[in-house]
Image (cartoon, rainbow, N blue to C red):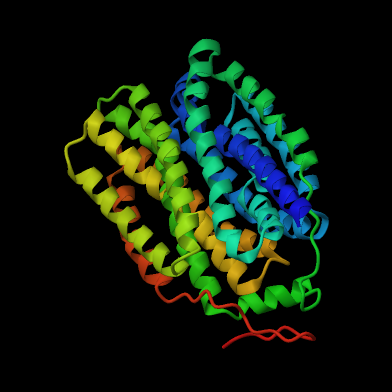
Length: 403
């Protein structure tokens, strides 16, 4: 028992370090929008499309990397994902065209993220801990990703100011390479559940027959739309309105800092109260925060307050959403099913980051996208209210889909 607990704690530590690195590096990509676009004379749409494709590739590949992690363990998938991540950062530093940006920042880093972030990592964590501690453990690891966002963002800006954007990306590639040994040490051994080894096809059919599963997917679409639009375009939005670029960096750092508290608290609350109800309230509050931010006069102070408020709500959805998947379907195919839900998050991310750049190039402002984000908050709050987290009833010989 003690050995199993020690193994679980070690896995949580290694998983936290991997996701902290992967998410921390990714969180600073928005800082490259202005210098790269200016140097090459691109509109913001070129950079925005590359990051939009990154999120789309990340999402489309996530169910497959999740299924591989469920089958072979997370360690191998993390190592391969880390190598692709490093390659993407190095090629991004050499990119001088829209095609180069698309292949490096879009394709390679998107594939790298699918192997080093939430679905693969949280699937391993979910298998390693007891059900009653699962939500809390997922909250801790998600909080580690938030810490990476907070800790690495100022460092990324410092690297850009010190070395220039191209050399800064190479330095980030060196940091990303640390995920290779960390992932290799992570011992995740998937095993059949107590009721027998539910096949991949049965797991997919089971999930497809659940209305709540699709509502969860649609709700996570909203999360992706909001957070990636803000992460990529907020520095530019603040700069356009007369605030220094350092203000945007500080706001994103505040998001990462307070996200630590938000995700940990969400994981803790998810072990006590209804996860779907918590998600409904979370999305509703998000909509209110965004509405107040764009309605009030903009200043550095209001931007900092917005960063703090959004940070508390930023990745709080992750332990709750993955916790619902684990509660309903079990952990045997958690990475794969969580990957499908995350695919919808990334479809939302694609729309948020791309639409932000596209509408900005047409209109010269972000007003329309902010309003869309508010409406989507209300939609997501309503969707989650009708989701149940009750485990599915199964017998020992065949999966039984609940009505």
